[in-house]
Image 1 (cartoon, rainbow, N blue to C red):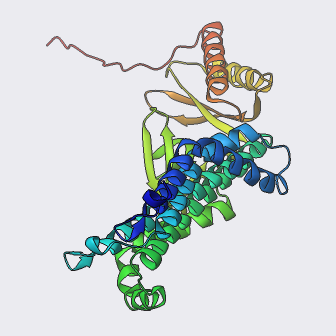
Image 2 (cartoon, rainbow, N blue to C red):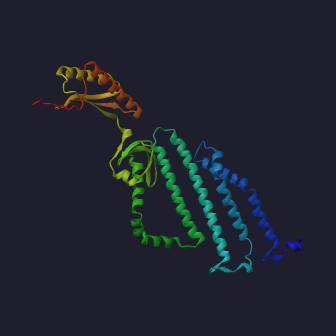
Image 3 (tube, one colour):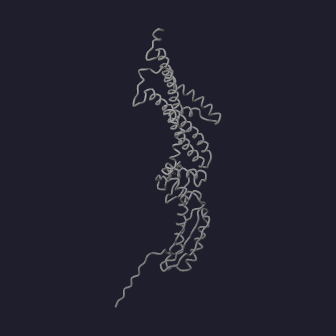
Length: 362
């Protein structure tokens, strides 16, 4: 038996092959249990910084990428203990098979590690999102969402650089130097993207609006649902979903309707030209009392705004305390109905378009 195990096949003993295959097979069969154990160790480290975390959520989130990372890592280490066979030393498109396999292994390893880091960021962001939900201010939620996307993009870029460095043996320093030469061209080509990125930072730190605010910008009125690295998503009053670049959200005149203290309303009554002065004098104080007695109305102004050949314009401007659109509509409807009752009470008719036809008999 020992003679069989000591036989050399493709520059390696059979016992070496059995050890490598057994190790890889063992890790493959138990990688889920092994990854859960390692995830538990990582959770204990995270628990030193963040208290009161859910262990099950953390483990379930990273167990899959962690299992793939451990399997690829152990496979690479096990295969590296073998002597590369002479028979497999041939080139494919001027590149050795050994280099191709080694490069592919490193790429898979780096991708798995990057995936693991992205999942950890998702978990950390979930922690901060739960804490942000405990505060009434929505700016905390949008800040967490923004930096979550920012750090995930940053890690993806670092992962790409690691692939160039370790898989393809690129000199990162020379790569950075080469990129610095083309920085101006890249900046010009991506000018709008850079401006939108800078505008996103301005939005988060200056806070002209936050997620959940009702805003009006460039003829678009709606509720802000998400603020991203490049654009802001708005759900309009027509229930459509509009994407506005962050640069336009910063450079344009933006009306944050959620921050207003009152809602303005105007009631125009075009009285019939046959309305007597006594009727107008009765209508003015009655309409003034109507608005003052309404608890939702803060200030109001009533006046005879205009006198024309066709009508007398009685105008009432009032401000309703800020609330929901439904509340504002109910107050406006209540005042309009009360105004109609006052017109009927004083026998006042509204102006209509009339045409006078005179027939002369010669």
